[in-house]
Amino acid sequence: MSGSTFGTIFKLSTFGESHGKAMGGVIEGFPAGISLDAQLVQQELDKRRPGQSEVVSARNEKDEVEFLSGIFEGKSTGTPIGFTIYNNDQKSKDYSHLKDTYRPSHADFTYEKKYGLRDYRGGGRSSARETVCRVVAGALAKQALYQMNVRFSTYVIQIGNVKFESESFFDSALIEDSSVRCPGKKCSKEMEDAVLKIKEEGDTLGGIVQCIVENVESGLGEPVFDKLHAQLGKAMLSINAVKGFEIGSGFSAASMKGSEHNDIFDDNGKTKTNYSGGVQGGISNGMPIVFRVGFKPVATIMKNQDSIDKEGNKVVIEGKGRHDACVVPRAVPIVESMAAITILDYYLRNKTIHL
Image (cartoon, rainbow, N blue to C red; front, side, top):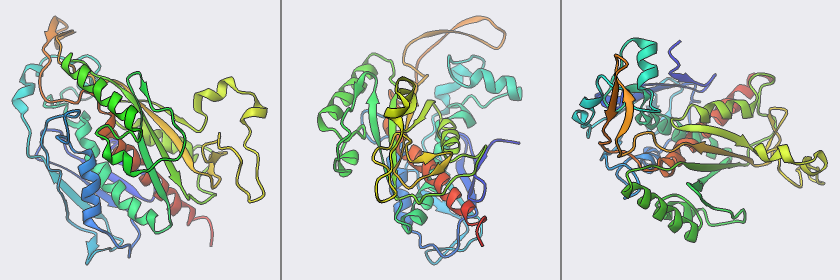
C-alpha cells in the first residue's frame, strides 16, 4: 500500500514530487453527466498557488491544470479523470546542501529510514506541493455538491496569537479580500502584520482554519469505523503541517456539563445549538458541519539550526530557499477541498444502501 489514494467510491490517487517534472492524479468514481467548469477549477488552484502576496512563498508556479481524460464537451463521462500540473519554477540547487543532512521537524529523516533513500529537492513527495492535486479533485467535487446546494465557507481564525473571535454572520467575500483569508478586517491586518514581522525575523507561525459546510443532508456516515467525522479527521490530518482536528465543540466539550452540551431539538427537527458540529453517532444530522484544523509553524526557517547528517555527525543547517512564513492562508482551499472530497464520497456511498 503506497498511501497515495484517498476515498472509497470517489477516489483520488496522486503522483509527483516537488521538484519533479509534474504533479498529477487520477480521480475514479466521479458521477457521469455532471457539468464541469475548468475555469472554476483554476480559480481554486489560484487560491492555493505560491507567489500570491508578501505573506506566502515566492515560488512562482502558474499551477495550470491539464485534464487528460474523463471530461467530454464540458461534462464528466463517468470514466477516470486524469490530470496533470507541470512544475515550472523549481530551483533544485537551493536544496543541494541538504543531500546528506536532515532538516529538523521535516520528513527528511523518516523518509530515508522508510525507503532507504529520498528526494531531497524541496522534500520530494513529502512536500506540500502534492496538495495541488487535492485542490483539483476538491474543485470538481464541489461542482457536483453545488448541484445538491451544499455550500462551503472556509477561513482563517487564528495565526500565531492573533485570533478572529467573531461568530456572527459576515460577508464571505471578505475572505478573499484578505491576504490571510480572515473575514475580520481589523483581525486580518493584525494577522498580516504578524506574518510579515515573523518573516523579517526569519521565523514562522502556525494557525487554525475553520470550515463550515451547509445544507448537507442528514444520514451521511458509515458506523462504526467510518464515521463521517472520523473520515474528515483523517482527511485533514493527511494535509502537510496539520497537527490537530476538532469538530463542533471539540476539546472545549471536556469542560462542559451534559446539560450544557446536549443539542436540543426544535419543532423543525433541527437543533437549537450545534455543539455536535453537524455529526451525531458518526452520521450527519442536517445541521451545518463545523470543524477546525490546526497547523504547526512551517518547519523551514531562515535561521541556522543544529542537526545531524547521515552518519550521525552534528551539523548546522543553513536556512535558505523560498518558503512560507505561515502556510495557513494557502491551506484554506486545501482544507475545503479535502472536505468536499470526503462529503461527496459519503453521498455516493449512501446510494449503495438504498434500493
